Image: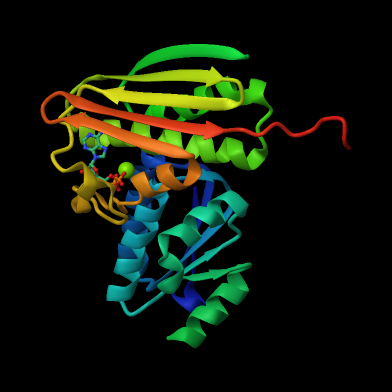
Length: 115
Length: 146
Ligand SMILES: Nc1ncnc2c1ncn2[C@@H]1O[C@H](COP(=O)(O)OP(=O)(O)O)[C@@H](O)[C@H]1O
Ligand SMILES: [Mg+2]
């Protein structure tokens, strides 16, 4: 996983590699929450372009981070998900609360427009 | 009639979620599944095994069993734990229900298993454990074309 801050957009970009299951969820969650506190960002953008597998544990991670971003007045963006990961995202209904997009740039634009 | 079967047992540590997915995928390869079918099977197995770890055994050590059976073009997986059991199965199966919201569970596990497999049965006894039986028919792709 890689984390980097886009200061201009007050956004933490979370780039996840490989499989996002219950086993991986804990460390992802902890790292993100630590970084949010440390950097004072309010938005979270998940780069899923290198996620090869995700199950409902990944949905739990996204929902939990959405709640944090929302409490800070920010929003959550997901981009780059492959077809099978996108299917889980669609099934969960989180598309109603997070912005799903094809790229970071478009996702941030769309999220800003929705506020 | 083509027939095959297998059985694995493993410890309830989360590293084995991936192990279980890989075994299930490897077991059905003989049936020439599509990429979509493979990912559906891996996801359903992942949900069942994760539930056995998180909800079935919670913090104690235990063994999870996966039995796989193939009859012609249909695969059956039976995931068993000897954990706490489910007091109200129909409630547990409801979309978005979770008994552990404090762990950021989404409550989608059973819904995913039901959607991705053709059938899913839940048998459970409080204090004894839970057995999930899932079946899926994998229609053979005609190899003579393309
Ligand atoms: N193997 C199991 N042992 C005990 N309880 C279980 C088991 N599997 C599922 N459950 C119960 O059913 C609920 C719903 O499961 P699921 O749909 O996978 O959602 P989640 O895992 O996100 O809570 C769980 O929260 C739990 O209370
Ligand atoms: Mg579950």
